[in-house]
Image (cartoon, rainbow, N blue to C red; front, side, top):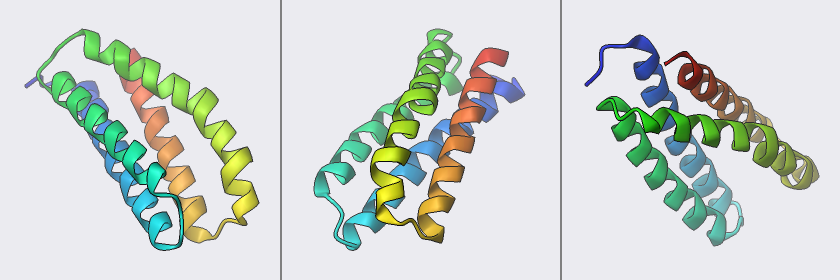
Length: 116
């Protein structure tokens, strides 16, 4: 495992992003949300966990994959999700908290991938 603090930040942010996304989708499912969101987020979580492991052991291309993920989700997916899903839901504190934390973890992913 690499001792670079940026690599540690990248691994942690990928793991947090995977767990946070899945946990939020499960909570939404309990409130009547779609099962497809949970399944999709589970698949994404597995991919992010694999990417985190690769980053942790120092596989150099993993930072580029993490950077691509962070940019695509931060600049395309999350803005669309916010406008098309979050705002029409009349979000509560949990929804807003999830959105802020998810976007923050994406920012850490991008920053740490660039810093490596």
